[in-house]
Length: 458
Image 1 (tube, rainbow, N blue to C red):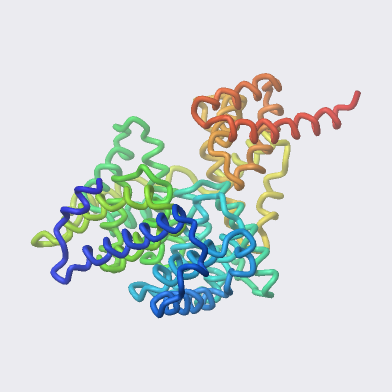
Image 2: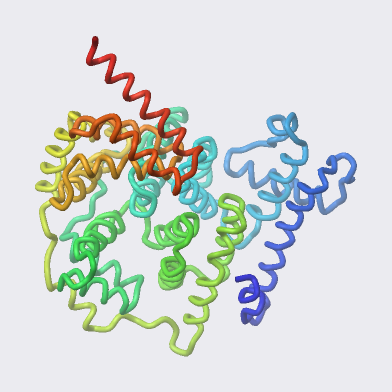
C-alpha cells in the first residue's frame, strides 16, 4: 500500500505529494512525541508552534470548543498540545475545506464508529455552530442508517435531541420522506452517482439473478430510493458524508472507490476529497485512513482519463420502468408493528413516539425496514433471528450497541430461546470478537436475566 501510494502519479501542482508529506509529518510528530515523552516545557515554544496553537484554538472556537489544557493537562500536557496544535492546528485548520464541511465529516464518521458519545455530542453542536440547520443534522444521522445500522443512528439521534434541548433549538419534525415510488427513485439516484455497474445491480434485482435478489432490491428501494432521496440534506453533502462513513467502517475498498467517483460526479474536487482523507486520521487512526488511499487514487486516475468518468448507458436508464416498489410503506409498517409485538411485546407505535420530538421518520423506518422487511422474512424463525442479532451486537460491542443488545436478549427469551442458548450465542463470539467484548455482552445479558427473574418472581 505505501509503495503504491508513494509511486502514484502526482497532480501537476504536486498536490498529492504535498498532502502526503503533511500526513506523514503529522504522523511522525505524534509518534516521536509519544516515544520520547519529553515534557512540553523542555521543548521550547517557537513561532511555528505558537502559530499552530493559534490556528488550532481558532478552529476549536469555530465549533464551540475551547482550550482543552485544563482538562487534559492533569494527564499529559503533551496530549492537550498535540490535540490543539496537530489535530486542529495542522489538520482541522487547513484551508482546503470549510469548517462547516469539516463538521459534517466529523459527525458522519463519529456516528458510524459508535464508540465516542462525548465527541459526537461536541460535533453535533459543532454542526450547529458552523451553519448547519437542525434538520440537516438530523438528516445526517438518519443517513447513517444505511452505512452504520440503526443502533448507531438511534444512539446519535438521542444525543442530538439532548444537544438541541440544551440549546433551546427547535427542529422541524414534519416527515421528510420522499414522494414517489421507492424503486424508481432508487434507480434514478444510483444512476446519478454511479455507472454501468449500478445498472448490473439493478438488473439482478429485476431478474432475481444474484445470490440475494432481495438484498439488491432493498439496496435500491430502501437505501437509495428512500434514504438518499430525503430532501433535508443535499445529495452532494450526502455523498461526502457517505465517503467519510465507508472509509471509517474500513475494509470496503470497492465501496470507497465507488463513492470517491460519486463525490467527483456530484461536484467535489480531487483536492477536497484529498482533504477529507487527511482529516480522517484524527478520528479513525492512520492504518484505517491509509487503506482508502489506493482506491481513491484509482478513482482519480479513472476520472482523469480522456472523457472522464463513464456515464450510465441508455439501457441502464430504462431499468427504472421495469418494475415498481414491492410493497406500500403502510403494509410494511403494519407487518413491522406485528413482528415487534411478537418479539419484544412492545408497542410499535411507542417506537415512533420515542423519536417524535426530533425524527419520527426514524421510528417508522425501524418498524418498516428492521421489523417489516427483515425480521418478518420467512427464511428463519424469530428465535433464530434474535439469537443472530444478539451475537452480532455482542461482536460489534460499541457503546451504541449496549441498549439494543439488551432489547434483543429479551427478544430472544420472548421468542423461545433459553438463557443457556442466549449465553451460548454470546460465548460463540469469543474466537471472533475477543474476551473483552464477550465479557461486556455477558454482563448486559445477565442484567436482563436478573430483571426477568425478578418479574417472574419466586
